[in-house]
Image (cartoon, rainbow, N blue to C red; front, side):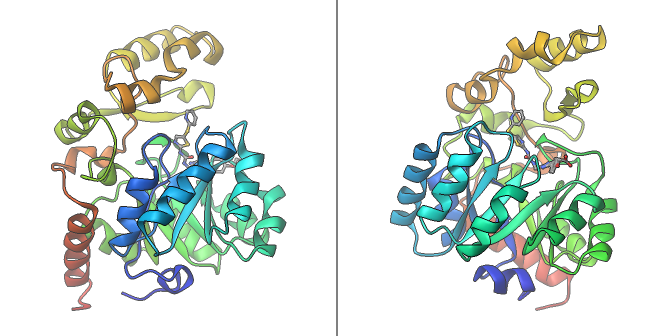
Length: 308
Ligand code: TUI
């Protein structure tokens, strides 16, 4: 399945692994790239030097292309943006903001830049700013989300820009990939399914929560604060949502969320931590290698799309 995205990135399959905070480290990124997709290292809130080390470790595991996600709300975004240039990273994705001030530097370095957008207006802005592709992410996604759904956002973004579009949010099997292609996407980005990959370093408690999740098990905290985060319901979200409803501010509730993603991912505290996952967690039912996941999904997608 050759598309403008597979050609642009030099990858075999149109599957990109999301640059998830604390989850998307070098082992996962390298495994996805080795299996023919595009692995991403999530810069998240990590300092530049930590990301540099991750890039170097990924290089030891794969000669294939991989990328780095620059989370623009990070206090270290400036240094991570420089590190990707210094380390000769070929692909950068951005999330949670507008990467305008880095675009000149990245384009000059020959980096392929793909920016996550949650609306048509953002997609137009990113294209104008020089993005090589946009990742249209629906609110089915885990973590920090916009307001539109993948089903409605992707075709509207496809109509609005001429750069290729990657669909993200709510996709975790070959049917989702085929559906995204029918909407005009030329690749998909997936997070939740890769959380439970064998190569993923996420704590077994976290993986088990995702594997056991039902369709209705995710919720969104911080909607009224303008910081919506999709995660699986637990003790923390029940407390957060109760206090949010009572009118407590973002700052007053920060004690519940500070460091909470790390607590869930690394320590396995899935009661008090933030278990970020997308709505499709209900369909993610087993741990497999990245290669097994990608080959299974591509076979299904190709059959549905009549390409095999
Ligand atoms: O970035 C994400 N998802 C994330 S980042 C993250 S780390 C974090 N942890 C705790 C609190 C906050 C963040 C966890 N999940 N997805 C990509 C994404 N980008 N979704 C939405 C956007 C987005 C939002 C605003 C892109 C552009 C944008 O522009 C801002 C503007 O002013 O228009």
